[in-house]
Image (cartoon, rainbow, N blue to C red):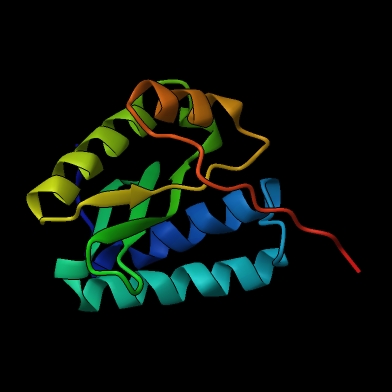
Length: 141
């Protein structure tokens, strides 16, 4: 059952994000740094519900989008599905509900940055009218 997140979700969300970042490290963070950033974003989103969308399907999936700067835009901070629950449509349900809520809240644009290692997400977005806007490149030094 998809619902908006509450502070009580923090325990299982921390476990989900810890698993995720060990499996799919963010290119410019260590797993520990990525977890810290995600937890900070979660707390910020809960304190600004009009500028964020935080949906969960406990204990297997979470989506976090936030407006960061331009009040007409909402940016994804991640869609996370537990490995054992992938390919069951949970990510699609969360994404569609988030798009509905974003429009309802008055956002004019959604900015999503799928990982290169996940071409299915890119295809899902293209089928729903998203377009490629920029490519982010990272080099370890």
